[in-house]
Length: 148
Image 1 (tube, rainbow, N blue to C red):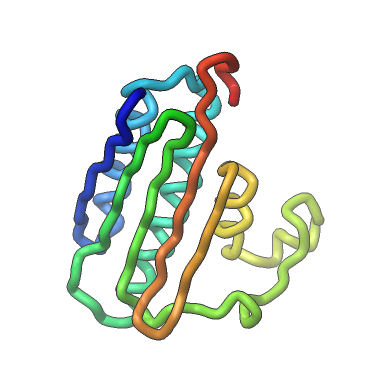
Image 2 (cartoon, rainbow, N blue to C red):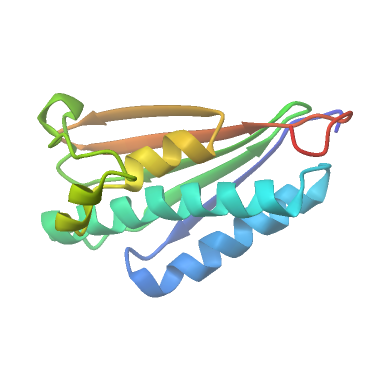
């Protein structure tokens, strides 16, 4: 891809729009990449987790505004930026949970979202403050390797 492509979307902060976001990931990945199906599915989960967190942030903050999503495709990266207008969060205040394969992890119903984003994406950037959070997830594209 010679020129970067960027697409901006807004979705209502409601769970029924997650399937649309997942479809956007698949469509963006298929535009001009050689990504494997497994890699696309992994990235779809990561973007879905970030979007779910944004939806939940809006619910906690009683915000009706839309969640902003930017998809950017360059020659070597596929990026999704998910931006909410919730209260934000502070990583040092997140409860430390047992590793996913630790049997005691079954005592916790939630808390794998950021972990999954980090495992299933090549790059994760989170900027958060009292006026909202922006999560940038990216995977590297390679013209020589279908599993980048």
